Length: 206
Ligand code: 5GP
Image (cartoon, rainbow, N blue to C red; front, side, top):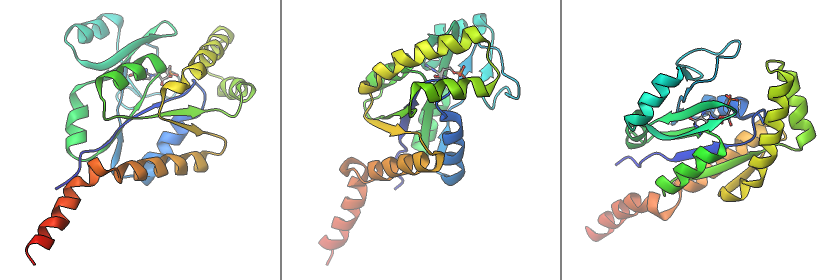
């Protein structure tokens, strides 16, 4: 019997390298998928609808809220972001780990609603480094960069609400750390119980 997948909540300040890390993790793990969120923010250069986000207007987003279509949603930097509920349970039942790359308010809602989640806060080496990464991205106005830095400080203060903190100093090492967490979680008794039962069944027939 296949074990259910893990629901993995991954947060960290904007610009902390979540995207790169997730991309690398998904390349290494065929058993893991990334939930594509819905947002009212404008697409950045190179972003594709249905791949990076489902880009919608506020009316469509609010209609989905009214229909209970989100596992969680939040307003961040003037835009709505939400996790579509429909595919999550199906993936978990298929044994796939599902990554939710979401900000802290939404993460806290998932923590309360889904007791079996795993939560990871991705840490940047310093706020100076974060500012450098945000400016290097070159896609945001000065006002947005400053606002994201202010939000980052607030988000860092809420990292204590997460089960694990992974430092993103070197991408490959951060990915390896997350892989370690997923493997350790797979060995929890609650996840190994079916295997234990299988082994016991074998013993009792001898
Ligand atoms: P960005 O605009 O940089 O793509 O994302 C801004 C923030 O929104 C990031 O911290 C990202 O993790 C978060 N985010 C993306 N999708 C969701 C979602 O579905 N729900 C919530 N609560 N946050 C999200």
